Length: 180
Image 1 (tube, rainbow, N blue to C red):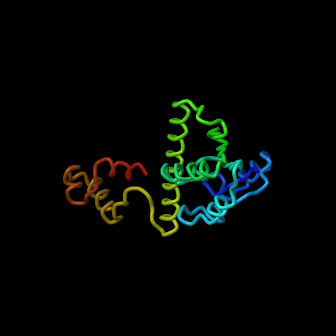
Image 2: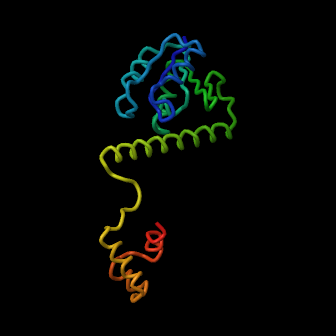
Image 3: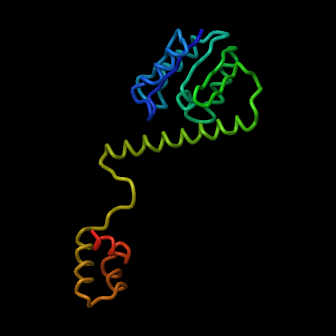
């Protein structure tokens, strides 16, 4: 039996692309997580419980299935124990081929997987921070200091070193504010 497993990822938040892929591959059963959380994976657990020998698990990318290299290894081992197979479409990983992968293919797939994992976690963290009203990057200088630095600069009676010492505004930051 072909089984599709989907989870919301940055490039497919509503899982429509993954569902279309499952239709294309003729999946008879589909398990879709209702969220993107890596902690609570009820559908993954249900899928693993229902998996029988000879089943083929289809995922769009390895990152959909697992959130870390260790997690991926654990899942692949669990599938091997059940004599089931994994096919990751984008990475073109097909465990029905057996151990015929070249070391280069394996290394590339793992590097891509780790990159996807890190990227997804970073994007999720930035989104969460944004929702809490936080902003990425260096904090802005207080407006009062910027105004004081600009006034000091325009008065032409202070050196850039004096301006920085009194306001904490560097030369490059001052010039950036002056351009705007």
